[in-house]
Every structure is written in structure tokens, then in C-alpha cells.
Image (tube, rainbow, N blue to C red; front, side, top):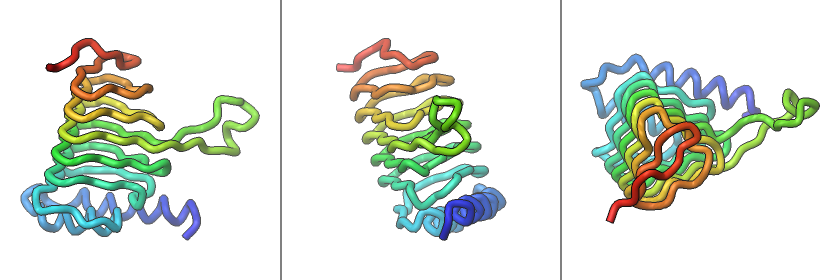
Length: 167
């Protein structure tokens, strides 16, 4: 399958998932498994709609909660640990374009996003390519995460900065 076919497949499957009623979580899990090619546990919970550009590069741990309108641009890979909660409108963007104007339209940059165990990402936060968020961290609402976030910290703002460490 070429790049365009992978994108078309993901858009079709996320559109299909997004039509499943919220109360039909088993059907949502089955749709997610088809999108990602990965088994998810019975505690996986998603509120549609959801969006992805590939789907096949997403790994989800146990007991993950995904609120409505989340976006998974997963070309570079997205790995989500156990017990993670994603608020509404969270965007995980693992790809972009070169900054050089000559290369911008011809190329794509990509790097994985890794989200540790028990992370909470607040509403409308954006996590960009190459970022690792450590276990038990919190990302504040509206934050734009451009750099790694250590475990057991609260990061907020644009760009996100650590403002608190938890004991």
C-alpha cells in the first residue's frame, strides 16, 4: 500500500469509527483494532469522533481513555502507555515538513511520540514529533509540547514548560 492509500484507508476507517454511537464501546474497540492492527483491552474507552492519517503506527496500552475529537497523525509512530487519559481535542502529531523552503513541499519529517504510563493530557493540547512524556506527567490544557517532559511533572503553556514536580 502506498502513502496515499494508507492515508485514504485511515480516513475511511476513522470516519467509520466516528459514526458508531458512544454507547457501543465494543464496536468502537473493534473499529480501533481494524485501524491500528493492534488488539486493545476491554478497558480501552474512546468517545468519537476520532481522526488519524495512518493508524497502523499507533500502539495503545491498557486502560486508555480517548476523549472526543482527538487526532493521531502517526506517520512517525505513537506509543501510548497504560492508564493514559487524553482530553478532548488532543492532537498527537508525529510528522511535519522540513523548515527549508526548497524542501518543504517535497519532504516529510517524522519522529515518534512516546507517552508514558498514567499520563493525563488536557484538552486541546498538542504534542509534536519526537517528544517523550514521562510516566505520571500532566500536560495542561492548550499546551504545545515541543520537547520531552520528565516524569511526575506538570507542563503548561506555549511552548510547554514544566511548572511543577510531583513527589
